[in-house]
Length: 334
Ligand code: TXA
Ligand code: MG
Image (cartoon, rainbow, N blue to C red):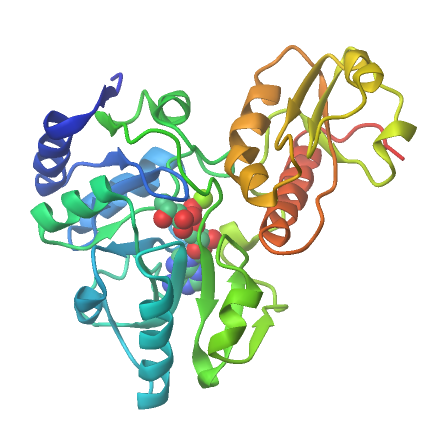
């Protein structure tokens, strides 16, 4: 099979038709592309796990077109939790925030990997919203990459990752944020960040006490070795000018390095000319993928300031480094 990449009304109606039949398709969101299946058809959900090569123990995020659908998949522990969830939904939905709530009994257990909690979000992407409304059913969708690999931020990326496993990709252009949604747990009227993302701790702190989950998250997406390139990746711990460039090394740079330094590397990807972290986030996976597919043997990545969305970039970069070293342990770097 080779996936058809479609746009416009033709793409939208074929996506809905396939989803209705229990098939899976890739859809654009404002964060990364998702591999979508009807959340209420267990066979469709099983197909998602199979296509990604994802363990059945790793639950999927459920997508809705509007907050009014929340009751179809989730319920609340308490009136206070309901108030907090509704405040966050009013502030950030549609958008890149995922809430972990109690699941309703009807939702197939396969979606949540047997957990009594479901992760829910309302995506702002107009194509995804249209598909949801036409299908009239919540959609389970993990990122549309092979398990543990780099998340896709364009239809071409999905084609590379899963082109031989799915029938179609709805092309919605490049993803706005380029990093996966922020996931929060809302127990005890507190906001606990399980995965940092485009909605930052600062933004959330207007709505309650915010903490970052420190306990080991047992789902594979919470494991250190995720989002990994095939090549070895090393985070530069010192100033970039103290690294000896070589043609066999690719550089993932936050801002443009000195021309002399840049020329020494085999390939250079700059994430933001002006040092804008949002712009860097939106280019991050694409740049990592380009370096992974280039002729270099190893990728060096600059560190990013851990403020705002920089927290999420460093989270993904550390996981990518860990995952890549598990693939190919090699030399150390200063
Ligand atoms: O931006 C996003 O969130 C993208 C787009 C497609 O919506 N989706 C995404 O899904 O990143 P995925 O499956 O690649 O990452 C979801 C993460 C995984 O680490 C999963 O283990 C965790 O969320 N997760 C999902 N449901 C959960 C649940 N019920 N309890 C705990 N963790 C959950
Ligand atoms: Mg993922």
